[in-house]
Amino acid sequence: MISRPFEYRFIVQLHDTDAAGRLFFAHLFRHAHDAYEALMREVGQPLPALIAEQTRLLPLTHAEADYLQPIQHGERISVEVEVLELRRRSFSLGYRFLDAHGHLVARARTVHVQIALEPGDSHTLAPELRAALELHLVTAPTE
Amino acid sequence: MISRPFEYRFIVQLHDTDAAGRLFFAHLFRHAHDAYEALMREVGQPLPALIAEQTRLLPLTHAEADYLQPIQHGERISVEVEVLELRRRSFSLGYRFLDAHGHLVARARTVHVQIALEPGDSHTLAPELRAALELHLVTAPTE
Amino acid sequence: MISRPFEYRFIVQLHDTDAAGRLFFAHLFRHAHDAYEALMREVGQPLPALIAEQTRLLPLTHAEADYLQPIQHGERISVEVEVLELRRRSFSLGYRFLDAHGHLVARARTVHVQIALEPGDSHTLAPELRAALELHLVTAPTE
Amino acid sequence: MISRPFEYRFIVQLHDTDAAGRLFFAHLFRHAHDAYEALMREVGQPLPALIAEQTRLLPLTHAEADYLQPIQHGERISVEVEVLELRRRSFSLGYRFLDAHGHLVARARTVHVQIALEPGDSHTLAPELRAALELHLVTAPTE
Image (cartoon, rainbow over all chains, first blue to last red; front, top):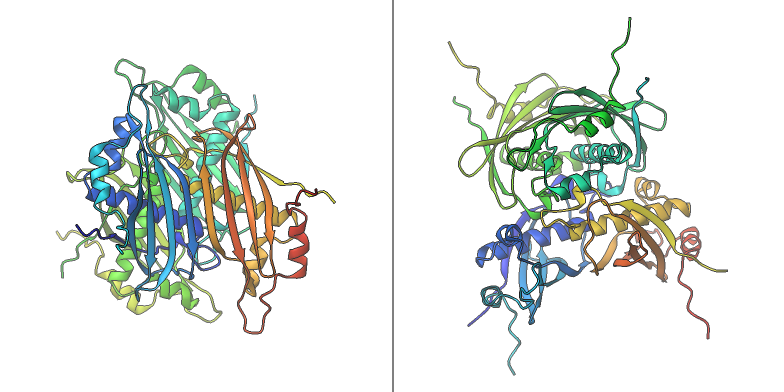
């Protein structure tokens, strides 16, 4: 099975920018989360249902980003999302932000940990969530 | 009893501005809501408790703003909040945004309606909320 | 010529909502502006170029919204944008927010006024902008 | 000379939270940047002037955060900011987010690199900026 990155696209809106004329850095994380929501929708694990059911949550425990090139108002950005790690009760996602020429302008990483809201609920990732995320898991290069 | 406007202050942050070099219009409403939250805290009706209790909510049914002067990064803005109307199950708030020289740079208005989340709960504003809001009710000029 | 509303679609993201479990009211204006940016792109008057050229700006002088139904995380919203008024140096836009069943859940209105950044520049709407906006101008009902 | 962290305080607003009932992770970075802006104001290097002058910019090249405890609506958060590294043309800041009981609920780090906007301008941190940041530089423990 060949795993491919999930692709998400957006256009940089006026409210994404600031008076310095570029994307305000924190908004990159908002777009990363939009890409994560889109991926979860695509693999049949939509966040709205997960949150409304109030049994399990997948809060972020870590987030980071590197900004390589200024991102301007009106740019068409493509985000490639991959599952970098899939552990017993957590997973991490990698995001590559590419401009219209395919140049890498930023990258980000988020770590999500499952917590049970009801005592007695499992702390382990649900099997269907694990199976869904495996579709976009980075495959280690074979030797 | 003389009612006075409630005062709330903020500094325009970089993320409040956009590539046109001014406050992005929608962020004025965010600051108006921060002023409303501060007022509710001051009159002993903090929103976090109200929302966490999940018995009554006070959602907005209307919001509007007039933008009179461009608002720049770094400006120190003072917001004067008044209760414009106090009805049986709704109230409206007026906000005047003043710059450091006391010039009016924007104004806003929000309308809040009480809804009961449990059947059988009252739709009427709670007496303690009504009493609290009366402290900042605009008094009609006497002749 | 029959003028039709411009259509813009979005999905309500997690960051659009707040602890009360609904869309935070100010974020409706962010989506309205995204719809406006999409319309301007479609009619050949993209905002990024307009702002970067620094000759003319179209700042908002007024914004308002009515919230008719709670808007939830994950909802697919369709926005119909129309030009309500087209004056010598200003125009106003109307936005109707419809849920997946076609029910009106919110509406908004914004007023934009052209200002010249260079002395001597015209305060009148550029002819090509006027022509572009006319494509989505509400046509008065004929008798 | 004993260097101390700079302190910045904020209250978690409704718009900081999401439908899961906690601070939306990306908003932590917005508050970190507000703390950075406050620090720069205090040390006499206000960002608005820096950005308006358009000679030098200090864009972020990296940002990261760890989320240790859920942060709730209405919480009073204190942010301790320190300069972690001060290099020839870049610096990094560390942020510790403490709740009302002094418990660490999150931490963040940002890296800022000076870029010259005019050819010929220096890429080295301005001496007055360097001196200002030294006031909050973490001092290595002496043995």
